[in-house]
Length: 232
Image 1 (cartoon, rainbow, N blue to C red):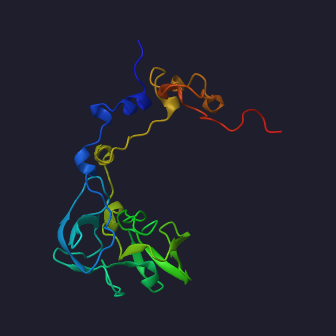
Image 2: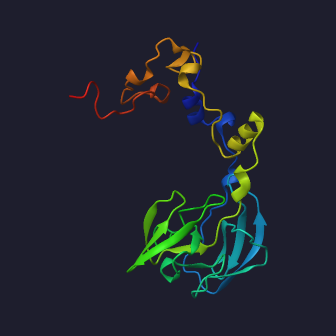
Image 3: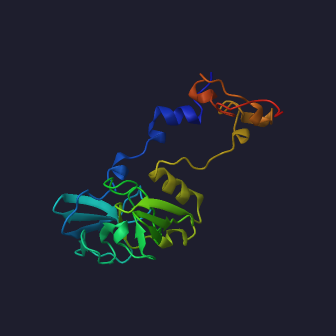
């Protein structure tokens, strides 16, 4: 009798492949239409994120953001003006060139979509009209609307990868906290019962074309290829 392979077991959502909802209950977005000054009321750790989080109280209510380097509880951050100070949430067009920012909005008012991982930051590179160009952590340049807001500073937690993991068990629990499957085993190296490519008897997995209506356990190999056969 067969059993569910890993893709099917993860899709079913058993206790083995289910993440704790508590880890992901914090939505890292600042409120829209912020005015005045806010206060950092709490700094805390979250297993689902690679950086410490900060709870900020404002006139519009409280919200959560990634903490910046050297942030402390009770610190005041501004939502208006053009003062370049760590933690201030300002429009990109009001920031001078070479300002370091994070939690950048994709569209004005969405609360921040880009650059939220620990230790990351972007740099304002140039301004052309209402367009602002940032150098992203990938070293590539990206264009943003000048009315998009961002947080000034560098996200805390830059040294998280400096300390070696040492044990495989530690890496396993780190990944499990973030609902990621680890270790990732090659399909050819597992048993035939666990994967269509298993046992390594036919070591040409890329020649397998998955059917369009195949179930989750059979959708392996080439998924919806644009063309098959030898190119002419």
